[in-house]
Amino acid sequence: MPDTDTLIQHYLEGTLTTAEAEELHELLKAHPELGARLLQHFDMDAMLRATKPLLAENIIRPALLPKRRFTFATVTSVAAMAACITLLGTWVMNAALDLRPEAEETTASVAVLTRGVNLEWESAAITPGTPLSPGWLKLKSGIAQIEFYQGARVLIEGPAELQLVSSGEATCTRGKLSAQVPPQAKGFRINTPKGTIVDLGTEFGLDVRGANEEVHVFKGEVELHQPAVTMKSLKEGQAMAIAGNTAMLTANASSFASLNEMDARSAMSQRFQFEKWLVSSARVNADAGLRLRFDFQDDEGSRSLRNHAVNGGQISDGSIVGASWTTGRWPGKRALEFRNVSDRVRLNIPGETKALTMAVWVRVNGLDRSFNSLFMSEKWGDRKVHWQITRDGRVRLGIAGSNGARHADHDTPVLFTPEHFGRWTHLAVVFDPVAGEVRHYANGELLTRSTLKDTEALKIGMAELGNWNDRSTGGVAIRHLSGAMDEFALWDRALSDAEIAALAK
Image 1 (cartoon, rainbow, N blue to C red):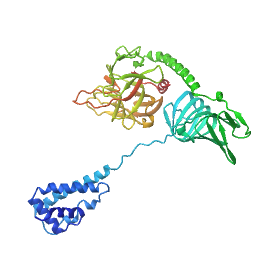
Image 2 (cartoon, rainbow, N blue to C red; image 1 turned 30 degrees about the horizontal axis):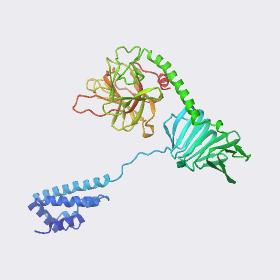
Image 3 (cartoon, helix red, strand yellow; image 1 turned 90 degrees about the vertical axis):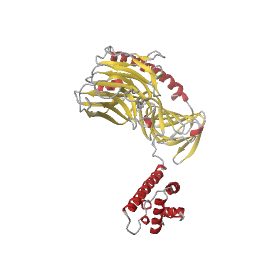
Image 4 (cartoon, one colour; image 1 turned 45 degrees about the vertical axis):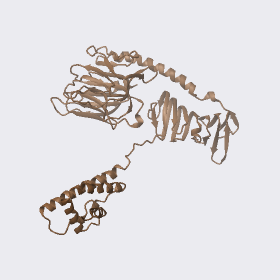
């Protein structure tokens, strides 16, 4: 018997002659068991080629096409063999592509706003927990705590203007700040209009107000660099004007905000916020159009959520399944944590709803599934509603059609990116048949509006918070929320922009 392995090797190397191709073809017809050996060689060749692209012309080589007339059986056999080879070549190409690393999500952020007290911004409003990219922060009043990724912690007092440059550098053109710089962040820099402070692992304060700029060292040592001036070293207890009088001063820590002061002011602000929320809650509960409101302030350990809507007598309390209690938007405010496929709150909205508004405070920890539930009718069809977040971060209100008609999805632009995970967000959606539209809101601001194709009344029925129950099939799609909720409300009327904004405050 001819050396079959040699013929196969010539084929893989692209050196198979017409005569050898005919000989290999006849061998495969006469000895079908050789097909297994051929596949073994293909597998080995694929492994060797997987690290580099396979040229298309190497998949089917012209040498396999003998220069003579073939019988119909021969032609079909060669075609079948070529098809197998083509499929194998495609598999090899896909294997090579699979070795390429997946595109990863990226972030430009260099710091995070970790805490804030009575924040009022001149620039775009920022809430605690927000990652910060290079750019300007303009604080009108209040105290903001910023933690740079390199490790430095900075408190800025409004009015102030701070430009984030990198994870280890910032520029202050106005205001007061204090900084704590651990050894890991040694070399942290703060630029001012008149010089640069390089920290050597310490605590210091900077006052950039009016004509004078002063740096105060509370612990450790800093370097003061100025154009055309010899570098100056300031140690613990020392202070100096950055320009003008260069005489040493005594550091005054009491004139700068401290973490202890921020703790006290933060606790006071949270108590005020909680009391304000209690007052507004009573007003919302009395709204004639409110059918359901969970405030999540039920007794710890309770397995139900009380419906506080004064006019929501037809809707019973919600039943908690699996979800556990956790801290809400501030200390003293409770929330429910959704982690597992079992976690949900079961409820029932009977009858028809001609108009609908839903609002929720939610903390999204991740988007692990194709659809991540906020509030969803049980099953699907006949004007049911599904309010959820897609894997790519869009908020979606899906409305099923009537009598088997096609459903309609109303999506926002991408809202929840990894930089938005882990912080509280107020979401609201309005089904407004009078205006003929669906409106989505985030933190009180209108995100998008889309036209309704069908304004018929909704039929919510049995539904769930944070999950979805569909027992129409043997398996249930996993759509539970990975995160927490600490307030949910539902109206049978369309709330206005101003009313939504008030809810988000």
